[in-house]
Amino acid sequence: MLYSKIEISIRKILCILMVVFVGVMGISGSSSGQTSQSPSDSPDVSSPGSLTGPISGYMDFHYNNRENEDGILDFHRFVLLFSHSFSDRIRFVSELELEHALVSNEAVGELELEQAYVDFLITRSFNVRAGMLLAPVGIINERHEPPVFHGVERPFVDTLIIPTTWFDTGVGVHGDLRHGLRYRAYVMSPLDSTGFSAHEGIREGRQKGAQSNVRSLAGTGRLEYVGHRGLVLGTSFWTGDTGFQDLRFDTSVRMVEFDGRYRHGEFEARGEYAHGFLDGMGELNTSRQRTVGVSPNVARQVRGFYLESSYFISPRPAPRELALFVRYENFDTQHRMPTGFQPLKEFDRDAWVFGFTYFPDPDIAVKLDYTVLRNQSDVVIAPDSLNVGLGWWF
Amino acid sequence: MAQAHARLIWVLMIMIALSATALVPVFNWAGAQERHIVEIVAERFTFTPSEIRVPVGTTLELRVRSDDTMHGFRIVGRNVNLTVPKRRQGEAVVLFEANEVGRFRFECSRLCGAGHNFMQGEIVVVEP
Image 1 (cartoon, rainbow over the protein chains, first blue to last red):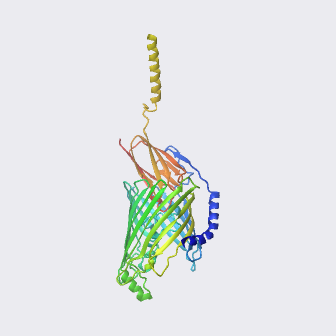
Image 2 (image 1 turned 90 degrees about the vertical axis):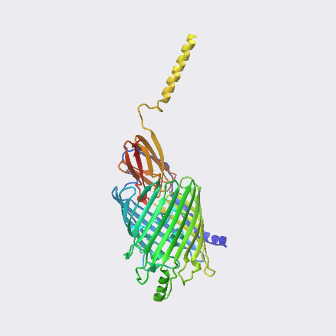
Image 3 (image 1 turned 60 degrees about the horizontal axis):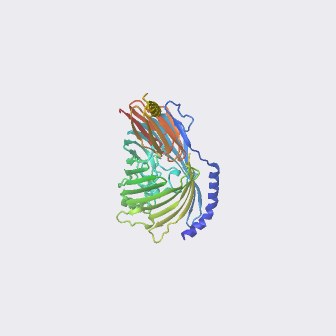
């Protein structure tokens, strides 16, 4: 059955792939060399490394074909990054994102200011950051440029358990503690529990800095080890009240997360585990049942994990780089329910995602994957999907 | 016999002279500084290693390569700022004369993503 689905879908994407490959092979080239400089030389001002005013960005163009549905071509992300250095110690960075190409009442598109902060770089171990911040939770939230992860779409765990891209207003500190240890600790606007759901957990609870209610504040942080070449180990947390819309009861979210990445030669492995504890969801479900007639059936715990390995089977310089990958994900937005509520089994899911990423340039990723999605329900079928993507960074 | 001794002495003298010539670059009595080579890997959003300790008087040769996109390598206050080529496309080489004790911050000088400002490190020059 799996093979027949692939066969049907592959015809639909062959033209796209051919256009993409012919295009990128035709225009890309590789170069290699060495640049050198000693302190007595003049600065490399002609390079793109100038300190003020560069515009960078990334884009994501997707074809998604879910089982038993028509295929979709979506310009998923158009992102521009602007930065400015007021001085060596005061920097500004911003990230403006247009999702799904069109913003209107009828379309699903969104225009989001995902980052806009000023960094006050005081010492190596203590720096202050304020503005629109990314929550430092998980692998993908702070490191989400298309060429740095495999698979057309971001991992399910980094979407439904950790609500990537998780951003909001806040202020905090960050620094390097030496011996390879780094930290971030922020105070940020909290989540809004009225957006929580059975299907997507806390995802729609993000206030996104749009006149965020700060009756209470959330705390978040990350500690990571980057002291060994090729190895990154991290742990992060989020804690905060979420019930400011309804003062009759208290709700809150606490999340812990662990992740690791390891690369040796052409092999890379990564894994992540995230577990969210949601308090007061029984009262929230009951209240919504009374007021709007439908219980959102929000769980009191959500959790997910994934393991991924990849290998560059063609590790020669671009345009000849090609990596294969496989990822297993297990995620459940109904992991533990409040007393009196039953879990919806279709939201206890796992997925195998496998495919390849071709790099005509290290900053351009042509991706293809097949996602086998399963759930624990006897009634609701989880659709598989075939995905093709073109993502780039500049 | 005396002639043979003289010939042997000449041969020995030539050998010693050649050996001395060959040893000149190794034992530079003029006191050239020791060159210390360090390989640095740049990747969103870290330099590894991010701390380099050397005794004062060392000449550091930093060989910086990227594991992903193009980065910048800038030593604050030292007039060094160059481009690190993309993955598998070469390396940047920086010479740093550690001629005074202190801490010298280096950083990525090309916007490389959401965590760009985290890409920092330090050269720590200490007393020998």
